[in-house]
Every structure is written in C-alpha cells, then in structure tokens.
Amino acid sequence: MAFQKTIKSEISFTGIGIHTGKIINIRLIPAQRDTGVVFYRKDKGVSFKAKLPFVIDTSLATTIGFDGIKIRTVEHLLASFHALGITNIIVELDGGEIPVMDGSALKFVEAILQVGIAKQGKTMPILKITNPFIYEEKFSRVSVFPHKGFRITYKIFYEHPLIGEQTLSMDINGTNFVREIAPARTFGFLRDIQYLLKNGFARGGSLDNAIVLDEKGLVGSSLRFRDEFVRHKILDALGDFSLLGYPLQGHFVIEKGGHTAHVNFLKNLLQAGCFELTEEPYFSFSLSPQTV
Ligand SMILES: [Zn+2]
Image (cartoon, rainbow, N blue to C red):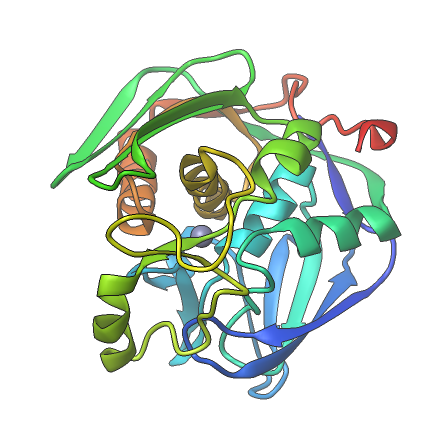
C-alpha cells in the first residue's frame, strides 16, 4: 500500500499546447481522498479520470478524452504526479491540451514542490508484478519483471550522430525523478516538422519547448544531459504507466518504445493478469525535500 497524497494548495499555469498551438490556462486543485487524478475541461463542463479506458489517441502524444472532448499531451504532467506520488488532484483547463512549458516536466515539478505535497491519512493498494510479461509490436518491446521497487530500463536507437543507442536504467523515486528525469525535454527532427504541421501536429512547437535535430546535430539549443533523449522517454513512460491508476512495483524494460507501445502494453498486461493489487508497504516515491 501507499499513502494517498494531494498538493497543499492550488497552482496555475499558462502556456502553449505543442500540438494545437493554442494558449491554455490550467489550474491544479487539491482533491479529497479517493478522487484519483481527474481532468476537468472547464470550457466544456466535462470531467474524466486519467485512466487507461479514456486513452483515445497515442500518435506523438497521449490524448485522453470522453464523449468527443479531448485533452492532448497529458504525459509530462501525469509523470510528475506519478513520480511524486500524488494520487488525488483535479486538473482544470480551458482548452484541449496540457501546456508543453519547456518541453519537460520541470516547471510542473518545481511548482508542486513549492506548494508542497500532503499525505491524506488513507492508503491505496499498489500494483505489484508477480510474473514476467513481454509485449511486442513492430519494432518495440515492453517487458516487465517482478522487482522489489519500481524500476524502469529504457533503450532507444536512432540513426543520428547525437543519439545512436542510449540505455538508462534506474529505480524511480521522487528524488531521482526531480534531478534526473523531470528536466529532460521532448525532441523532434527537422525533417519531420513539415509533415507534422501538415497533419495538425507541432503547431506550438519551437526551440523554446523542444530539442530540434537536423541531420548533423542540434538546431539552436544545447542538451541538458548527454543522454537527454532516453531520459525523456522514461518521462513519457512514467506518464503513460500512471494510467493504470496505482503505484507500481516491478521492473519495466522498454526497447524502442513510444506512446502507442506503452499503452498497448498496459492493455495487454491487464488482460494477462501477471500482477496483484497488494497492501504490502511501498518502497518508492519517498521524497526527501531537503535533497531537492
Ligand atoms: Zn514527451
């Protein structure tokens, strides 16, 4: 089991949606026990939970929705809640996309740590992997194995001089998430941008909110980590895996993954049933504020 948590006070952000190009106002509101992570489209008067059945699209970003109302690019905000152990919160917004901020989860995490996280005196079960499970599609493979904590190993390969093969394996807790994963920005290739724009994506993308690569190297910016690319993939996975709705215990190994593979893996994992919901004490998500 893990303790249910929320934020200590409200937080507001304004920013551009990387795919819609629209300016969106968002408010994070503390929520009662057992609320879960709830999105509320204020402009439409519709709310729904950040859970797997509400995923309606996974091309380039994870989109959740209900009854024709959608919210794009939820993954970086959800990753922040997941890694900081926030289980009850209302995300109110006046448009169809979570602002991309600087392309990472850093702004969300900094603001949450500034207001603080409150334990709510009630526990929830954790989802513990009990047997290995492997899911494969096209070039991607996502596997999971029993493990005492919550670990992610991510492997990517891009034929590009700055990326190539990158592998990173780490036990996830609040402290190392804040330092090692939250600052890693999303990335894209200049050669794809024309195609993305034509298909209604990346309208709000810029050098201020993404790492952009041409054939030889970086366009404009510098990297925050040499392996920022694989770190960002871990960020995306944390956001997508939060859609199971429980703290996780297991070792997740993802090879050449993306949002589609992450979400399809989760659906298949639920069907395969190689897990149990347990009240055992939870190891991860301990965040010591003085180390941040
Ligand atoms: Zn991302």
